[in-house]
Length: 264
Image 1: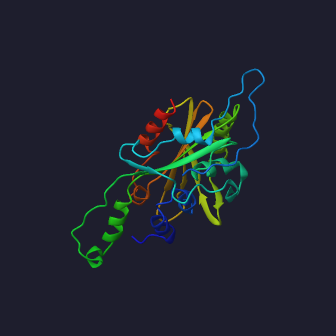
Image 2: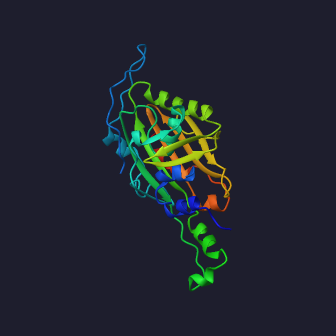
Image 3: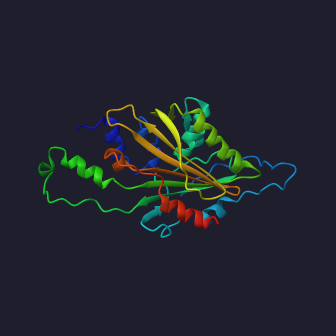
């Protein structure tokens, strides 16, 4: 079956999960500049945010996620003002899916975890031997691996609770889908749905944004935001091979487990 140019673009750029958030919708760690300090409620001590240096010690690192290669985010995290939804109430979803920390963090940092998986072997000795769709099938199988971007962000006062609530509100408000843009790359998601979260941390929320308007059927992108005190961990996972082969996948559980262990 012949794939659309949009899906071929997904396959060609699978190394960057950030741009894929929009390409799928069609379509080390940076940090925002610290904003003004916001205190907590007057009737309780204000939580103090961690610094970027402290977060970098807490985020997953090389060798800490079994079965995954962990390193800097390829291409980096886009600037907040370069990622916009057509409807501003959906901005928190697009932010989460592109590795941007929700709300107004004092500091944040990110990593990328890529599942280790060997490319499938084949007895063919030339491209001619992989005719009639076999080459495309082999390519899809070789890309059947999870790529997860993890962003840790720390907040002053009740900023973490507010950031998570913004995402929760957006999931409900944008259930019917939304469009957006990243650095001029436009994309569309036809639906957004909350799904079962990992249950880690003090609070957690998981959702799927899907485009099912093309010939390829449903193309889902999965994300989860977890609050650990005044720190938010945001996870975004994409698996191009699973999409193309219509296999279910979720946010990478081993990545969440490893990151949650470092935040205890």
